[in-house]
Amino acid sequence: MQFKEKKPIHIILESLFNTYAKRVPYVKKITHELIQNKIISNQNDIINDHIAFRTMGVKNLGINSFEKIFMHHGYKKRDFFSFKLKKLNAYWYSHSEKNMPRIFISELKVDELSEKSKKIIFKYTDQVKKDPVDELDINNVNEVINFLNKPLWTLPSFEDYKILLDESEYASWVIYNRYYLNHYTISVHDLNKNYNTLQKFNEFLDSINIKLNDSGGFIKESKDGLLLQSSSVANKVKAKFSDNITSLISGSYVEFAERKILPEYKNIPIEQIESKHRRDGFEASNADKIFESTYTKQTERK
Image 1 (cartoon, rainbow, N blue to C red):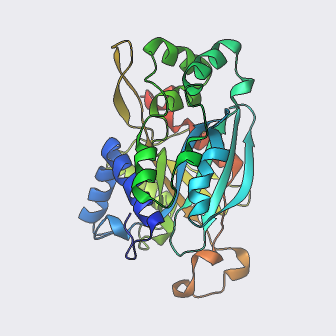
Image 2: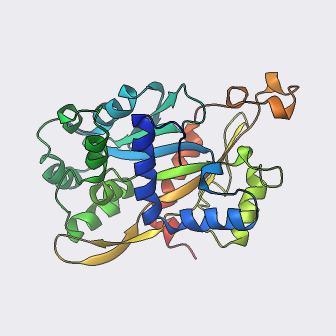
């Protein structure tokens, strides 16, 4: 992810991606194979459809805090989503500039968890006494980058992590990973014609041994059939906990999206098709299954 004209938001997004790519081996592997197969010439040829973050829905944190960074830098808040079984809320955000990734921010409805899990989460999140974004100079790129890369609470114990894992794998992911970028998304329809459908691209991924999330099927399809999504399973990261226990846990993953041309634009020549002619936004049923890319039943699937 690289931008020719370096506005503050471009620098922030590049930093997020660089940190994420170092922790997710699949990113480098997929890019390398795309270059080897002459599908792209370098990482910058990939259009990033969207990036996603996970947060805790508690006082001073959550969506209301985190979104301020991006809305200050030109992003606009769009649709709301609720995931009742997973106890999550989410919004997505768009930017008027061409080829800027959409942003998807979700939060855990902590108050809906068991008393045991709530107590564990509050033990860490209560360390945040004020909204940390309000303490930032959001125009200062280095301040924002440092904030997005630093932990907001102390390292959890392995015991606390395991208890959360049993009730909410989302909660366990956030309590350890905090604000790490959860995933970035390759815009498949922007690739060359031999790879520009999700069906073709998934076949390519299978050929290079990228393990895909099969929850809801390898391809998740919106009700209107115009948004297709798939994702790798999360790469494992070596995590050291506060009680000196080290364990491999779910880190981040890569998503792949195909946005089909809207029916009213189907007669426009393909070379004239722009982003505005394609299906925008997200689909709750798709996102619900994509969340499971970090779940144990996916990462440990044979």
